[in-house]
Amino acid sequence: MSQVVLQLNKQTIQKMKSHYAKQSKAKIPPGAAFAAKTDDCSITAYQSGKVLFQGKNPHQEAERWGKPAHPKGESNQKQSASSQHSKQPPAWLFTSSHAGSDEAGTGDFFGPITVAAVYLKHDQLAYLKEAGVKDSKHLSDQQIKQLVKKIVHMKIPYTLLKLNNKKYNELQASGWTQGKMKTMLHHRALDGLLEKIAPDRPDGILIDQFSQPEVYQKHLKSEGKTLQEDVYFMTKAESYSLAVASASILARSSFVKAMDDIAEATGLPIPKGASSSVDQAAAQVIETYGEAKLDEIAKTHFSTTSKARKLL
Ligand code: MN
Image 1: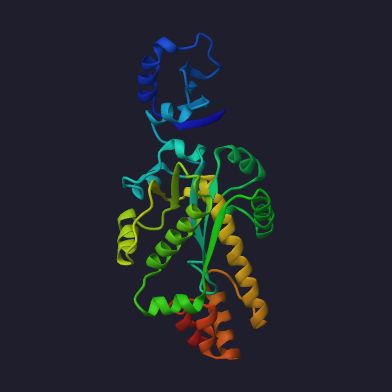
Image 2: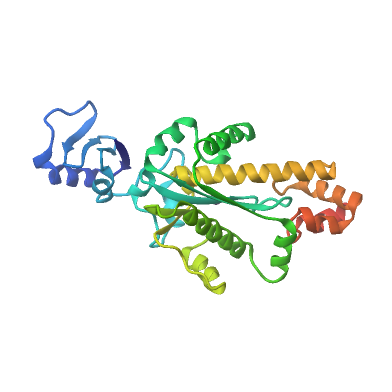
């Protein structure tokens, strides 16, 4: 049985109540506005505006009324402002067999960019959720390690790409934006994943949105590629899709490993992110190995490079 939760306004709930009048249940739970049962699912709407669709196929029914509720603490407005495009995922996608992709390392001066794509069957979703799969930003490095073990143990199909710093700096110098690099990495990761799982096909593919879909497609076109079928884009997708959350975990884990490797190889502290402590660490690298070293271990076009020079 799957479930979809919507947060709807009073007018919509009134509309629904009359729409389902003939299928309404006599008994309603406390706090409910109405309850109904269709062939595909049962529906319970609460006074609070929360509406539950439960059953063997709740997605289509839910989709008639709205998109899934937003996770706690996120404003609906913020989401809608950044998601004005036609490639928003349909609500049923999150509970179906779908693929998702996400990246790590893009805002970090040191270390590579990593991108992962994951395919989850609908019957694996509940277990992964139970296991604690969620946005890697809300997980410790230790928790991420444990979850990667689970994902590998379950033989979940995934692809993982790493763009090392040398190549990154080369592409950057040749005029590629970071957006274009990310685009080509996501595309390649998804291509590899689709190949891996063939002849199976996901019901849809969700990319954690980092640019408008038109910009993403423009980058693909510039390299003679086209978007795969049934691709959707959504910001903060890792909070909605377990496939994207799993991808974020795999990408993050690979990034953290790469950072540990750099720290070990240089014998210097290699902090994540981009901050004044990163400026200092970069200055230390230059002092110890010369500036050319940064080309191998950092994204040299970041302003960190010039800030580090000033610290010398
Ligand atoms: Mn992301």
